[in-house]
Each structure stands twice: as C-alpha cells, then as structure tokens.
Image (tube, chains in turn orange, blue):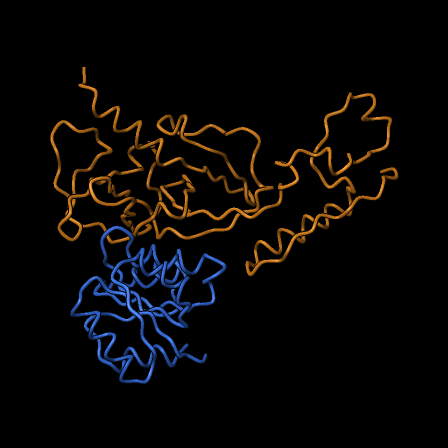
Length: 217
Length: 120
C-alpha cells in the first residue's frame, strides 16, 4: 500500500457497550491497515490498480458515510432461523402466550385473538407468516406492540433482547428474505455471519391490514 | 448510592398513597406521578434519585417509561425500580432490558421496597 495523506482521525467517544467498543477498536485496527479507513471510493480499474490509494478529503465524504460507525440500537427478535430487528419502542411488553380464540376465515398466520388483561389483542404467528420452521425448541413469547385498539401480539422464539449494532455492519442491498417481508425491510446487517433484517413493523402492519380488508377470492 | 428524593408512580390512587407513605415514613422526599408520560416529564423536571414505577398503566406503561428515562442522557443516572403485579420471570428480564435496576412484585411489604432502595 502506498503513501497516503494524513487524515484527521474521526472523533468518537467510547460507550458503555463492550461489544460496540470492541467493534470500534477493530475498525481502528482496520484503519491502520487501510489509512483511507473507508468509505470505499469507486475509481477506474486501471487507476485503482496502478495508483496509490489516496483517501478523499474528509469534507468530500458524504455525511452518511462519515457517520458510518455509529451505533444502532434495536430490539432483536428470533423467529425460527429468521433474525429480525425493530425499533426498541416497538416492544410494549413481553408475556407468555395466553390462550387464543381462533377467528373464522383468517389466514393461517393470524392465530386469533387473546385477552391481555381484558383487552383483545390479535395474535400473529410470525413463523407461519414468514414461512420459516420453528426448528429449535425455544420457548415462545408474545411480544405486544402498540397499545389500545392498535395493539398486536407477535409470537416469537425466545425473549426479545436489545442489541447494539455497528452501522458499519450494514449490508449493501437486502439479501433474499421471506416474501411477506417484501418492502418492509429497511436494511440488513451481517454480524459475524448472522444475518439480521431491520423490519419496518409499521409499514408491515399497514400492508397486513390492507390485505385483510380485501375480500378473499 | 445516596437517596434523598424518590418519584413514586402509579395510576391507582390507593397504591400510590401506599407507596408514598412507605417512602415518606422512611424519611425520603417524595414526589408523585400518575402516568408513564408524567413520570418521564417529572424525572426530567424533578430529577429524583430513584423512580418507583408501576408497570401496568394505560398509554405509556412502566416498561416504556423506564426505557424513556434510562435511555435519555439527562435522566440516565436515575435508578428505576419497577413495581408490578406482573410476577413472571419474563417481566423481570424484560424490565432489566428496559434499564430497570430493581423489581418489586405487588403486593409488597414496606421492607421489600426499602430493601430494594438500600440495595442500590
């Protein structure tokens, strides 16, 4: 690797999150190998092969790329082999699945309604919706999202947990995903080989409501 | 942890008065709120040392209020203890996920509340 102009290091404060600090340290190590330190700059192949790697001036880097190492907090859910992320605020509470009363003429993924402290909450089986197998024997929980008439329960495997992701792990584009998630994946992350889909619950539920409002065949 | 001011939060007047009485008798300065939203607002304006927070409340519940308080840098140093009739292990874990530092199950004795406060 050739010489490169000095570059003002990005200033980042450490956090209380060990994983995030480790991720930032790893990125700093990478930066020592590649003084450009990302973002990647597209150059003509010949120039790229023959020339020195020169990092662009800081002020020419798009703001979005300069922020490339920010920490992203999400609520992580597991549904079979599918790993989903959503806004932390999306989870109102988590309970053990209560008895469900089935509703006629509903799709298989809508299990029915459950009484949660007297309020009727529709229960959606995400494994059925996304056509994934519940391969392991994880305990199921009902994640209650939203409140009042808008409340809905999602059957998930294991207890949802808050995670902190390095936004540098965000993938370019979105890998293949279940059909029902089409248009409702904000981004995908790859952390140590584990694929996470950042799920737009609001948009997803609007689409579900539209589909249920349409009379079937 | 030195505690002088406690914010008690419950949407039930009876439960709130009970909680308030326990803390007042123990010599703490007590302020009160009756909803999750008020709790978050009062955490900012009153900056108590501890919030004793009921979980089951309409609109913003205790879990959500707890997260709002503990994730806001201006109130993140306030210790939140959840107080609830929800007694599943899941509730405790979910509470911890939202940033709570303690969990007391209703019905409780004064000692249970005071022991949680001393444990901080």
